[in-house]
Amino acid sequence: MLLQRVALANPFVFTQFMQVAAQSEQPVVEIDGYPEYATRIEQLESRQQEQIIALARRIVESHKTNTPIVAFTVHGHADAALRKAPHERAQFEQEVSEQRAAAARNALLTELIKLPRGAGIAAAMPFTSEGFGSRKRKNIPRPGSGLTESEMRQNRRVEFFIAQFLKPLPRKEQPPPKPPEVGTNWRIKIKGGFGVSTILPPPAEDLTVGHVTLFFEITDLDRKERASFRANVTGGVLPGGSFPPNLMPLQTETFTEGKPVDFRTTGGIRLADFVGSVEIAQEPGAGVSVKSFAGNFHFSFTAVENQRIFTRPGVVIVSAGSPVLALPKASLGFAPGIGSITMSSKPSPAP
Image (tube, rainbow, N blue to C red; front, top):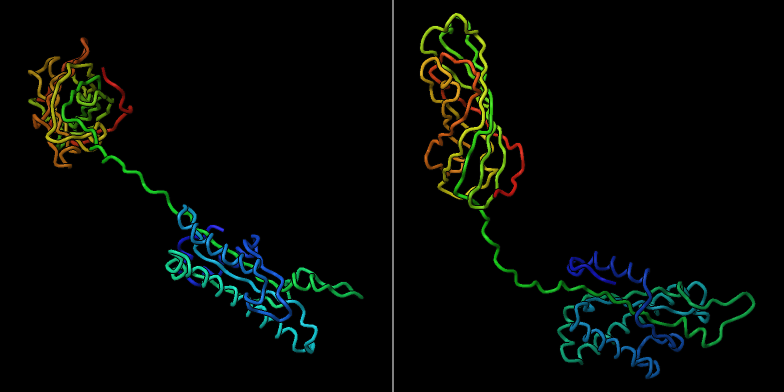
């Protein structure tokens, strides 16, 4: 039976393990043939005594393998003590079986000590012995007939059970882990987006709130990966004067693909590190013109800065396009808006 290491240090758990082993497995050595009431191994024939010596050698040799024998238990058994008074038999049979188990246990320990390395193994090995009286006899007489001497000697026996421990295989030397591969050189490109500007009602009619959604792509130039992102920010737009009569309090604008811009970071990060908080502002347009729809966007990646890593330049300026038929907006631009970035696609290889 394979024994867990924890069982060796806990006598109660060890005893339970050995009881299970004795109930579920066959003994590795069984020695019978005791003369009536005899308890010592020396009272047996030489071939039976040699079984003890062979088991001691097996234990020592097992410690050169991956499954050493680390514990053992001995069970002693007796035949019915028919020459004792009926009221004395059970107690007497129990004592004889216990004495046989203890004597066999001591005989095995003695043989272990005689062998090279055996003394150290014996000193570290937990063991038990237990007697069962005549309760587990192999041969029981039938009504009207008795047992032969040979059959009674089979009842007078000791049984050895062992427990083995599976040693863990030695660990192979592993190469030191490689540092995580991260990038410091990046490229960002706006792919599209839209904005909604809302004029606040009096008394804040001179303020406009802007909601901008941008779709963009960031490429890790070092690791040759890229991913798509989405940014949602909300900020304020301060008008430069009154709105023309034909402009509605609610205005929408659309952004199209712009030119890519390269930047770097002061430390190594991954594409996923851009996910999180962000501040985005839009440069003002030149008065009331289409240009104000597609001014450059200023990115401050606060999610990256929270890791004490900063972009160079500190604010990344990225351009976006606008539709040819876009209506102009009377605005000085989009003031810094606070929002968040989410990743809309997993990183994929970039050419």
